[in-house]
Amino acid sequence: MSRKRTLSNEVTAEHEQHSIDPEQQRDTVIKEKTRAAITAQEPPPPPPPVTNNQSSARPIPSPASQQPRPPKSRARNSKRMCRMFFPSSGRMGFDKVKNSDELPPIETLREMIMYETRLRLSESIQELMDLYHTDEDSVTLIHDLIQQHVVEHFGYQHVNALRTALYRFPNDPVVKEVFYVKHNKVTQGLVNCGESVQDVDLFTMEGHPTTLFSHMSADQPLIVLAGSTS
Image 1 (cartoon, rainbow, N blue to C red):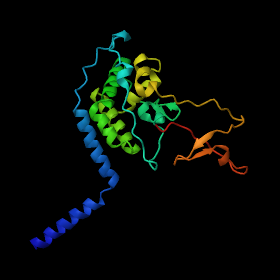
Image 2 (tube, rainbow, N blue to C red):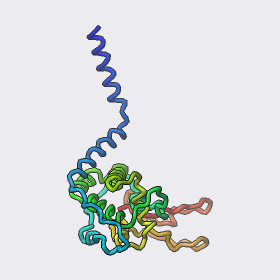
Image 3 (cartoon, rainbow, N blue to C red):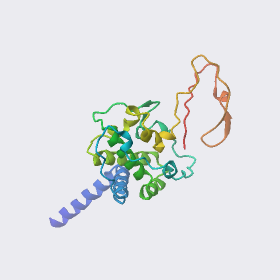
Image 4 (cartoon, rainbow, N blue to C red):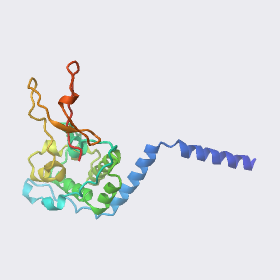
């Protein structure tokens, strides 16, 4: 009886191991590595007392120190995504993240942004980004985990407490200088409804040259979505 029970337990354990979703396994590993990378950094200094004098806040690190590592070259068949539209950059497509039940004061938001910037550009997080640079889902998860850690460190619960900074304080110098805002050039563009389309040179996902007009047909509508893939 004991032998049968042992075999049954072994079969059950093996079945459970194989039934785990590979994406869940990946996410679990990334969460553990991200927590370790964050723990490897020193905690931020305590936030300054809230005052009406905005100039009392410490300045964000100089732009020269905010340059992330150049992205590694991607495999031709890797998935492309326009990160300038991502909520982790304070964006919802062309719009900004606007809704949050938690509204930190600007002094606290500045400290949160500076802490997040330091974590994102730290050696341990950059090494993690290098490891997963071809997997957009993993990179997105790392950004989400960093921002969740930041808001919880400052006593809040939802990432939108941080992500709404761009909408709430678009002209604040600290908000404007953070690298994922300063270098985000996303815009609705200058093309208006009813204007004539001009032909432009394009490249396929495999790198072959083509043109816009070569993809147009008289009896079919054409939808053009453009964005950075860097």
